[in-house]
Amino acid sequence: MTVLSGPRLLRGLLAGLLFCAFTVSSGADVLKIVVDDTIQPITAEYITRALEQAARDKDQAVLIELSTPGGLLDSTREIIAKILASPVPVIIYVTPSGSRAASAGFFILESADIAAMSPGTNTGAAHPVLFGPFGDSKMDPVMKEKVENDAAAFMRSFVSKRGRNEEVAESAVRQSKSFTDQEALAQKLIDYVAPNQNDLFKQIASKPVKRFDGTTVKLDLVGQAVHLYNLTLKEQILSYLMDPNVAFILLAIGALALYAEFNHPGAVVPGTVGVVFILLAAFALNLLPVRFAALVLILASFVLFALEAKFATHGVLAIGGIVTLTLGGLLLVDAPIPEMRVHLITALAVSVPVGIITVFLMSIALKARANKVATGAQGLVGEVGVAQTALSPKGKVFIHGEIWDAVARVNVAAGERVVVRRVEDLQLEVDPVIVLEHSPVVG
Image (cartoon, rainbow, N blue to C red; front, side, top):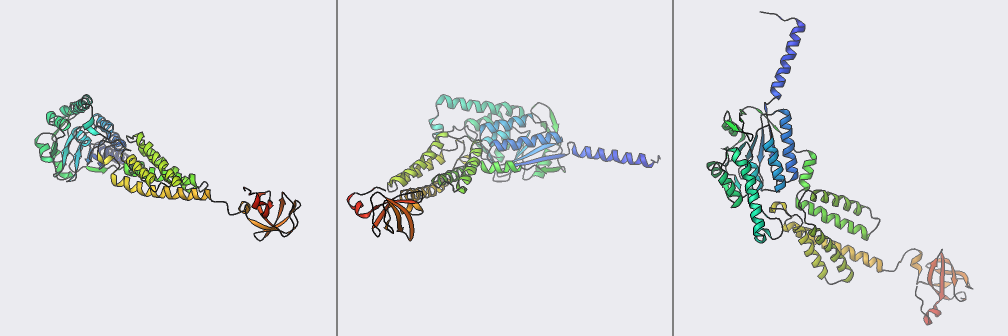
């Protein structure tokens, strides 16, 4: 037996530790992400970032727990492109029970190296939906066929290479078919049905996995460390703002705050709040398919509110503004699924209070502008006082408990009543009251 000296023993231990550390970090882990949201640009960014991190760490696999009603086609294509090109095998697991991978979620599920579902989940219904207020019923037949053919070809482009049922997968696109977990398994749309993550890993263990590039790998994930990869703070904030209902509320409150600032210049706080809220809404809406005609409707609603306050049409214009604002909210986001549009209850809950508050604020502003100034020097115009000294033409007058310098167009004797017609440089221009009775002066 060879005995190592001190320095050699230390070098041996360090080499052993480095080897162990390298072994643990190289392909020993599973990176897990949870997607429980609509498919939109933030989802695509999150998945892309996770796949890149897994590739850098040389993880064994990426596990994506998926639950989604669908989403935007552009984001779906971006996610699938990253999954197909990933050097790390991707497992997509529709979970927990009661969840779904519908529409865009079905495309993503079928693109995975390993597709699995929990009992009590469903998938499918991947027919492409026309954006706009009329939907498929008003789509040009040729355009509808083009959209369907494009989506079906996109599905076939990766399903066949994954060894799944191409014909059944295409039926989910063309006929909007949906499948339970057992139906999807029986028709070879997915590879496994598993009640939990550990059971899924046991079923996968040592079974060959066919990758998109044609190579075959075996994954032994039982007992391996699973690291949860979370959204960044930026992604969490943007994901919240990307909710069309939140974006619409921010936009409406921001517009109302700016409206209040314009009617009460110098208030500062409403203007600041308005700018911040509108910028946040604009940032979120920039990532969503927005109808600019809806923004025009929202702007028109505030015009109607202002006209109601000015002309007092007994609520006719105000109701028109509320209807216009509601329609603008409903049509604001041009998304393929209801979950990515502004809900009717949100549109009404915002439009009615905003309409009432806007008309009220505008009414106050108009009344304030119509009223004669009653404070300061300008508040003296039209007021009646008494000449303290003779005005010939200058002298002193007593008014509102104060003595002012005054000048009159005609001589006024001391003690006569005078009326103020103008204030300039702290000097009053006055006329005798008797003169005004015969020749009214417009102040």
